[in-house]
Length: 462
Image (cartoon, rainbow, N blue to C red; front, side):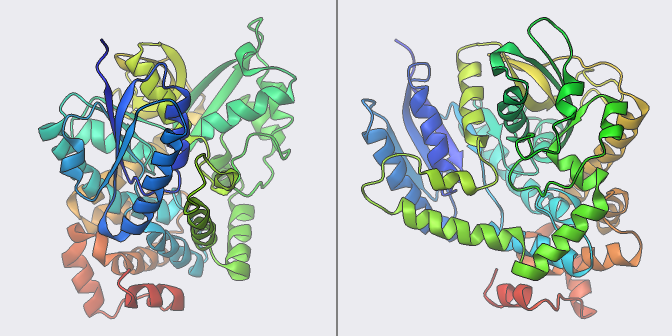
C-alpha cells in the first residue's frame, strides 16, 4: 500500500491556496494525499481560518478523504512532511505597498520583484526561509521544498546554495503563461510544440520548435506585442522592439519590458501611481473582495475571481511539480534549480531558471549552450545583483546592500539610490533585524519616508 502524502503550505492563508487545493484535487489519483497543513502567522490568522474552511469544503465536495489542518505553529505542521510549499509574504501586502511607493516617490520603478522593491522583499524573506529550512532539518529531513515565494530565484538560491537544502525547486508562473498563450497564436496545441527556456527568474528567454523540429521563434516574436502574446496580466504591455528581438531570435519574458523599455515602463508606473496608488494597493482591494467571496459557506470550489490576481497558475505548477517528483514522471517543466553547466556563462552552483526534466531525483536542467554577448552580459549583471542581495540579506551589511542597489539596472545611481535604500530600511525596520544597527543610525539622522500612506502604515505597526 502506498504511503499517504502529507503536504505543508507555509503562507497557507494566501488567496492562492484555493488554486493549490484545486490542483491537488484533480491529481488525487496520482497523489494520494491524506492531510494538508496550512501554516500562517498571527497577523494572517483570520485569512488562514477563512481559507482553511474553504479548502476543507473543496475536499469535502470530492470523494476523497483528505483532512485540512490550520495552525500558527510551524513546527507542529512540519513534523513528518513529505512536501513543503512556500507562498508567504513577509510583512503582507503592506510591506509591498512600501516597496512600491517609496521608489515611485523618488521617480524610480516600484515593483514587487524587480528594482529596489524586489531586493527588499529578498532582504525580508531570506532570514525567514533560513528558519524554515532549519525546522525542516529537524522535523522532515527528507521533504522536498517547493518554493514560489518571490523573488523566487533569489530565495531558491539562498535555500540551495547558502543553506544547503538540495531538495528544493523554485517555481514561477511566467513560463506557464507563455506556454498557455503562445500555441494558440500559431494554431497549435501545447503538445505539438517543444519549448526551451533559459535565464534567471523573471529574466529568462525562450525558443519554440514545432512538431517537425522547425524553429518558430521568429513567428511568435511577430505577435509578442499583442494582447494575448504571453505577458502576465500584472505587467504593463509597453512595446518591445521587434527588430531587437529578431536580431537576438529569442522570446523574452514579460518582465524584460522593465529592462528593454525602461522609460515607458517607468512613466506608466509613475502615472498609475499618481492616478490610483500602487499595484499593491489595488491588490489589497482585490484580496479583500476575494476573502469576502471565500467566506461564503456554500462555496466549495476555486472562484473565478481568483484569476484577477497576477500570479495565476503558480499553484497548479506546484502540484504538477510535486506529482512529477512523487511519480518519477521525468517531464519538462521550467524551474529554478542548480545550473550544473546548463548556462555556461554562469557558475555551476548558481540557481538559474531553465527547462528541466522533473523526476524523483528533482530537477535535471537541460543544457542551453552558449549565450550570445547580448544575453550573456545582462545575465551576468543580474546574477551579480542577486548574489549581492543575498549576501546583504544574510549579513546585514549596508555596503553590500548598496552594492546590490548600484548594480541593479532599474535603480538610479548615486544619491538617489542611497536615499531610497535608507528610506526603505527605516520603513521596514520591523522585518529587518539584521540591519538594526544601521537603521538605528539612520533614524538618529532623521531619515524617514514623508509619504503619508507609508507614515500611516508605520503608525499602525506595519
